[in-house]
Image (cartoon, rainbow, N blue to C red; front, side, top):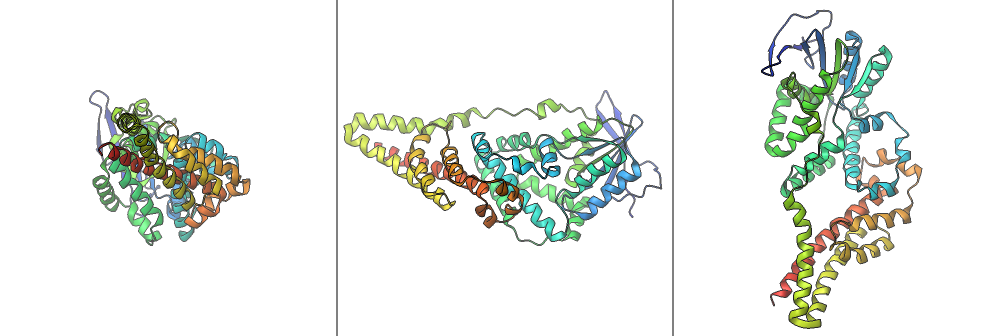
Length: 416
């Protein structure tokens, strides 16, 4: 096997800078180039760069932990992802009504879509997604090492990422996610190992930074700093950290630097402009109703009300039906959308989703099949649980579109 990339890091506590130089190592541990070693204060930290759907990564993780016998094994997981990976019964406890009430529909759908994509690739390669993390967890238990979950909470990461984006940036990100999920490009085990190598990975990250620079910071850079900080504080003279290969260069660069994890765990406040924009359309529409009534008496108001009602009701109900909603749910969207569009604190999709959930009543069996059904679009529509989520999102999208069409129509009527 190839010799590892080894660095010894000495930390200047005053200048907060890190100096690196090669140093001799134990020839009895012939690790690959995917393993980096950091030394500081008499401790050794082994960082294993992996791919999440690679059999070789899982085997290498097992071999490194066996050879090093660390006191602590760190993994690139938070509590939510750890539970999803290790608890096969977790899906049984999902409550669709709670998901809708807590406004986690979009979050759950995106996670299911990405997990389904990884699972689909994993089946092609004959390996379970996250197999290298499972290998680390099981090996830590086997040798009696402490297990540390060092990644930031996934919900905080996604929220910080979303809030960092402009409107068009959000559109581009959603397009990129959808394109990746439905892509049929062939991904072989050889291609995965090629991507894990330094030069290929660096090229991919540079391209990613060019395309979506606002996403790279919260999704990659902040987590690099967060994880190396947690890893550095892990107990024991020997520590093994198992992380995605894309994080290794950033973690090495951040080693020894001061990291304010509390700041990285804080959700930035929503922009004042965005908060104002949520109320801009309802305010303009209500003002238009008043002006229309004063200017044209009852006839003008009647026409404006219809201009607002029709697009809202039609778009919300049609989008709901396209997502496979029951007729009562579509009727709910028809009635609720014109009202909820005037109050940004209530989403039409939440009301429609609750009605759809009451009608479909997803079973435990539906919850158990979520991971399998989420691998295909047909499966998402077939599963009653995910069908409810799709209807909820579709109703919200239709309502939003109808509100802008209706609002524009109302404002045009004022100028007549």
